[in-house]
Image (cartoon, rainbow, N blue to C red):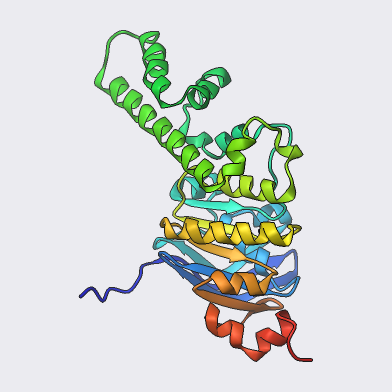
Length: 297
């Protein structure tokens, strides 16, 4: 019998954050274990989104900074690591407000989610061919590219070629998975993202974040501005994404939905964590019911 405890994929330890001289977080500690869905709930201004900004390294863009504490991903300290390096390590963020590229098509938005795997020296036209023509065109594209280079056939160039083929096969495989997960995106793949409904844009933002098969998916207010029907769809798909092996940390004002799907939750009050428990227990907690679920006075 295997009694091994789940591996902790993300660990936030005694984290304190300031915006200028204003204290936003004080001594926050939380963790996400491999295979978990973990929710952060709480009132506006409690520090929920600040926690995500600290994890993904974007505090500086908001005049914020980590005062003390550390953040570890798979046991490695990531304080100060640039966001693009975190993406390579396996962390993807679905930002608040979706932030799709409105003038680009659905498919182009998804391709942008996998840009680091595509050889940046390729022309845009060739990158598009990968996704338009499908997997059968990959080797032809790479053969054409490398036959036009030196004909020496060195070991290193052959290895690099094969690596790029593998990367692009992965992108095409992931694109197909996302279309399976969100069929409406396949139907609208040539449609401008800015013409999609809010719910469809949220699906697109999630799909874009999945293009690199992240180990940890972070979501900031995924239900914001969505209709009840789309909220149900989004949370249902998050459960499916988790079943496929992706750990999830979600910041959400809709406490009921977040706690219904999560394994564990953290309840934030201004600047820190008030208490934590399983999602099931938090749904029954009188403090949560009164503050977030509309029960009691």
